[in-house]
Length: 231
Length: 344
Ligand SMILES: Cc1cc2nc3c(=O)[nH]c(=O)nc-3n(C[C@H](O)[C@H](O)[C@H](O)COP(=O)(O)OP(=O)(O)OC[C@H]3O[C@@H](n4cnc5c(N)ncnc54)[C@H](O)[C@@H]3O)c2cc1C
Ligand code: SF4
Ligand code: SF4
Ligand code: SF4
View 1 (cartoon, rainbow over the protein chains, first blue to last red):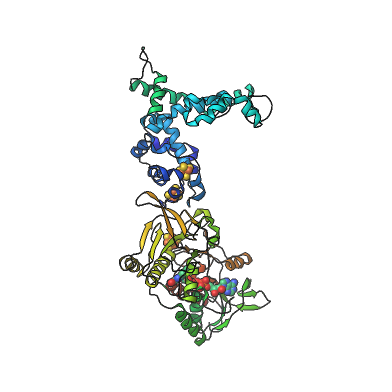
View 2: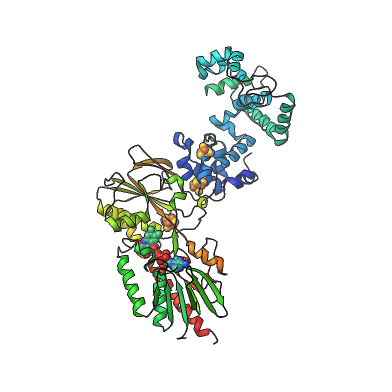
């Protein structure tokens, strides 16, 4: 599963852009908002990938570390060698998803939730986040104000000039079936859908490994979702 | 050879030393300097690493040597053009002044990196961010270091590699003398203000020269200068005019924030602007860093890619004073060989 990692990383054009040659200066870490809050150090990510050490790269793929980056790309603006650790992270994440290494870490396992929410929203509505998908029961963090907005959705959005689910132009307008179809095709051709499936596949295996199964011994993804939310 | 004439462009220490050596060999030498005085950058420096000697004394002794050896020194004259005329050269200055020569030595020196380009360091925006050049000038003029509030700084951060080894500003080379300049300035601050904490933020300490490493040892042992391995990411001014800096302590692997009273940026050396003007007008070429290109990196360091045009000093690449002087003497030797080997 974890073989030829170097080759697979290098096959991604983003690595060419993201890692020319790192001189270990630490400017990226000093500017990185994620490094300020987590055990996360973009400099050492660059150095590990540069070292080509398969074992260390495999460890990264299975770690929480690669999921801390917020993809803000501040590192790109400052690196004196024109590297971009944020892009290196993108490549590592994709490989972690493809190899299933992501199920080995708590942060990695959250990929499943993201596919099921943002991933599904994208294809269903054409929006990453759609108001109707933010059900107050599953989003208690949104608080009572959101609950009120949610319950009076049409009026509230109309009053701020949005065109919620309407035809024609405007914020939050309905994305036409033709455009959604096109989006679907893009995900199909670019491998996005396959990645969704891969993430689901490995997540199901993890659910089974955890004993989160239905009476037939199949993965119970409801239970798995609850497990992830409480993890 | 005695009737041959050499024109030296640039009256910094490189041009002065080469001119006096050539004149002592009996050549006719004209030393042309655009400023009012010879001496170049050294006129602005307060003390020289690694021995804290006086740049003024050095410049004076070089000026005496050029005078005694019979060099014709012409100041306030900037050469903008070198033209070949058969085996001779014609040099032109702005105001229709011309010089004729059988060989030309370009000793036009370097430019200091413009630190305002590195916007995130706040030079030109925050009063307590200064450069190593400002430090020398202030020390020379006032003999003291003050914050803009007029107080003595209690904490100073010295930042290495500003404008060098940085693809973002287009200079990927090392300026070579700034590490040791930083250590020298750190020691000077600590001697002047014993209670002041001084931090050097470096990526590699490049202390290549004789006695440089012992200065490093002295800085750590006697002056308790702290060396932190990490390059500055950004500086921000706080309400009280102190400066907050961000770097990573890469040996600890942790981001680091620190508030200091003053920041000194160790600015690098860049190819001289007037050198680039000279280049446009003739076929001298530059290397990948924009400095004058040698005919051969090893055995013809002072020969340009144009026959009869030589070069010396920091017009070739960053170098310290002693190397510049050695390089000037080697240029003089090459010019003498050039005349000796040339068929009349
Ligand atoms: C901040 C700083 C501190 C330093 N401190 C030290 C130190 O302590 N010890 C040490 O060993 N080294 C030190 N150095 C290095 C030292 O400054 C150089 O080695 C030295 O200045 C090189 O002399 P140069 O003659 O090659 O160039 P320059 O000093 O640049 O002189 C070049 C001269 O040429 C003139 N010129 C240029 N173009 C023309 C033209 N077209 N026509 C006429 N004239 C022209 C210029 O006006 C100038 O006078 C320091 C460097 C920096 C940046
Ligand atoms: S800023 Fe660039 S060179 Fe410096 S540690 Fe980060 S990736 Fe490496
Ligand atoms: S892109 Fe990621 S690694 Fe780069 S600065 Fe932003 S959070 Fe840090
Ligand atoms: S001499 Fe030191 S400070 Fe200057 S560019 Fe080289 S490494 Fe950086």
